[in-house]
Length: 261
Image (tube, rainbow, N blue to C red):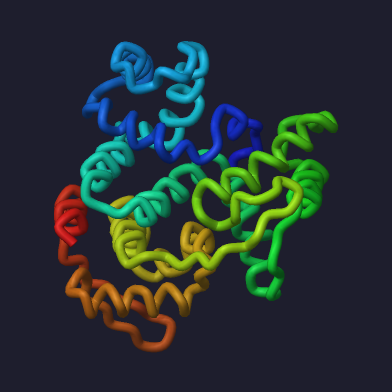
C-alpha cells in the first residue's frame, strides 16, 4: 500500500497530551468532531484556548488521530486513560499520531532510532531539517515547501517527539535523546489491534508500527514471548514461522484486561 504524502498537519498541535486526555473524557461513542468541539467549548475545560484554536485541535489533530475506524482508537483510549499511567497512554497516542502524520512516523523510524543506535546524545533542528528536505526531494510532499514551512515542520517533529518522551524539552536547536522502551501494555495493544485488523501472525511481527519503538522482527518476537508469559497470548515459533493463539476475542475485551493491569 502506498504511504500517504507528508503534510503540515502537525502545525495544528504537537503531542497535545493533556488536551487529548480532556477531550477523551468529554467524547462519547458516536460523537462527531463538530459535536465534540461544541461540548468542549461549553465545558469550561479549555479556558486558555480560543474557540478557533479549539476547533483546529479537534478537527485537525484529535479527529484524524482518534476518530478513524468509527472512533475505535478514542473508544479504547477513553477506557484505558483512567487506568493507565501517563507514560503508557502516551505510547499509544504516539502510534495513532504517527499513523495520522506519516512524516512523524518516518522521522522517528529513520532519524531518531538511527541516532539512538549510533550512540548519539542529541538530535538537532538541522537533523530534522535534513530529513524534511530529503522527503521533499523524494517526492513525499504534494508540492515543494517554502523555506519557512520547512523550518516550522522541522521544529514540529522534534517538539512532538519531546511531547511523547523520545526527546528532552531543552533547547529547540538541539534536544537530548531520552531512553525509550515499549511497555507491555503497548505491545499487547499493538499486537492485538493489528491482528483484529486482519494482519496475519507473521506479518504482525514485521509491521512498521513496531519500528516506532526501535523494534525489528526478532525484537517483536521477544515482546510476544513476554506477553505469552503474562498469559495474554499463546505463541509458537519454529524458524521463520510463528503462530499465535489470541486469548481475547475483541479489542474491548483486551482493553478491559489491560485496564485491570
